[in-house]
Structures are given as C-alpha cells and as structure tokens.
Image (cartoon, rainbow, N blue to C red; front, side, top):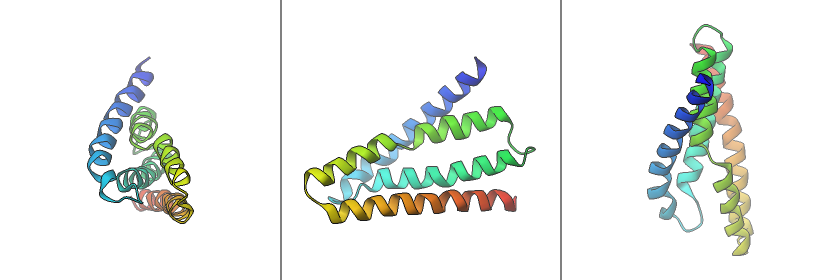
Length: 123
C-alpha cells in the first residue's frame, strides 16, 4: 500500500507541474504545442536520469524510483495530450507540422533518455 501511495503522490506532483508548464506555453504557437513538447522532453531526460541512478543500486531506493520515475514522470509526461494534439494537425490537414512535431518529439525524447542515463553514469 505504501508503494501505491508513493506512485500516487509522485503522479500528483508531476501532473500539477505539467499543468503549470503547459497551460501558459501551449497557446504561444499556433502550429506547435510547446508546453506538451517541453514536459515530454524534460520527462524523458528525468526518467533516464532516475532509472540510471536506480540501476546503480546505491543512489535511489526502489521506493524512490517508484515515486520519481513511475509516479512523478508518469504524471508529468503526457502521451494522451501528445496523441490528441496530433489529431488537431490531422483535422487541419497540416501534415508537415504533424510530421515535424512527431519526429522531433520522439527523436529528441529518445536522445533525452540517453542523455539522462549518461548523466546518471557520471554520478
């Protein structure tokens, strides 16, 4: 039960922070959801860092990893908003921006995870 509560708490913190970042940034550009993009990339970096530190075994405990990676990063990042925003590009027939947003989100996201893992290795 304690572990489920840690995930719950971390998810709550992550969700609120995502809201505080996305709400003011998403409306800035008509063809790019900056807030969602940033939280997803930052979340990728953080999950790489947290899981890398967890893999070292002596820096983050299992409960810390549940709170940070599963809870916080799970609540902070948002695949559902990412997918919904792709729908708006399709609905408007904006295939170029759809492709740019999808490729940059996925590509930079994977690179951010790798960077997070690399940073964890340096610690």
